[in-house]
Length: 575
Ligand code: ARG
Image 1 (cartoon, helix red, strand yellow):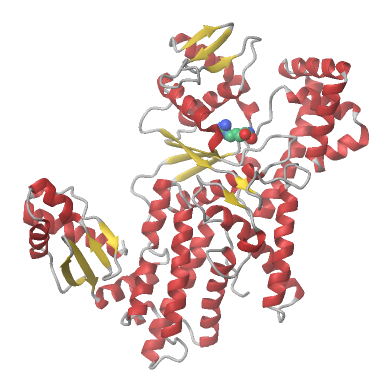
Image 2: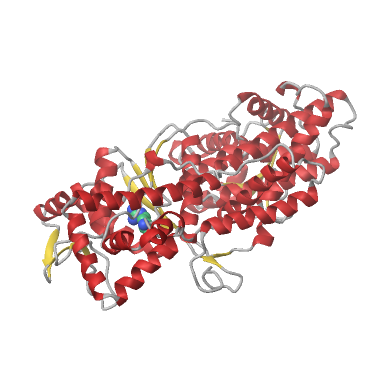
């Protein structure tokens, strides 16, 4: 792999073994970025404790076994026993050439591919998607792309809420709500759901009919199922429009709504009962996964069959785990879902493990995220306290982007401006979500996300477009990768940034934290900017220097575009 930090780690590990024997072969050299050198190696400090020797002496012994003159230009001990390492220009140049030539930016497929089953978006039928679903959709899409880029097999599952008691009232409302209800059921889910709810709460007869309708639905009455299907399909079409607007790769083939588990629920309860894991509690069947306690310190139940014989959210999720590992062959199950559902998921994972449906190497992870807040620091809502409709929000972002794009690019045609505004507006919304540590809440702020300064999508998209513009203005064919010669400090800094792309992608693959990739891309763009200010490309001192810098510029453009692509964000060539 081209990443110099991997070469360094190997060289240092060898030096540690040479100095202290093979029993220290597993020691992590602890490579860190450094202000004073290219990297700082901190291993001597920990080793000193283990070996009970002064750290600087340990550092000296490591240095003694380190080959100089190849990758490493110099290595010096600093402070209590850090080792500051400077790479050689030849090594950096060679690494840049390899990556520029490779066509995959140094991204090698993993040696241990997983079958990843990722549950994301998962909105509820006949209900408007809210900003929580937006977060799940954006984060899930980015994670799926990163894992695919690392060579894992990724199976997307849109776990729609398409089953349950509300469908009784929704179907009854569709039946007697007239043209308006029919129209709302496809275009204004908030209004549709609200009207059904209001009738249910105020009209006892309607409520009774709704309850009977639930029974009909559960017993598979064909007419009722047909109405239900109609509602599900209308919502799915509605959600698919949002996915298309967002540029998210969720399609019909990824639909795996709760209803697909209906035929499997009784089997789940039977299996858990047989294994002695489910017990009766006040008429309901429950699993009590160990370690989960309520406020009263009593064990918390996972209710798998209600007193009335019905199944709920937990049963469905247990059936889903079983399906995903046993039937789909999943080894890494990922759930992109807000933090409030953390306990539910942990209990499901624990019960599934007890039942043997989640056994190593298979494992499950909750990719939790915080809330989206309004400017007032409270939950993001419309002025009258309603759930914000995603379509409105995205339209708004694109509209605002249009005026920004118009201001910056008055010379572009109306059509081009509209196209770029779409890319910038949607990119801004996605990036604002992805760039903050997902577990934290963040404030939804159009002005900030659409700014051309700071850690934003427009800044990165613009940085990419600027690289492309430089390459266009060069009016020469892109020089071959062998032209790369890294010399000045700014070229070195840019080279180091470019070469660390694969490690950053690998870090996201492990941590499932897309903000790390955002932070990296932002740093890369600012590093390029510094490079460009002090290292003229088109007006370089010699053709050789110009060619080398063109290779760096092209590699920067490709890395920005690929990195944004992994986040599901498009990088236009002009803006
Ligand atoms: N439909 C649920 C909701 O809107 C999310 C489902 C998430 N996935 C799952 N397997 N529980 O809250």
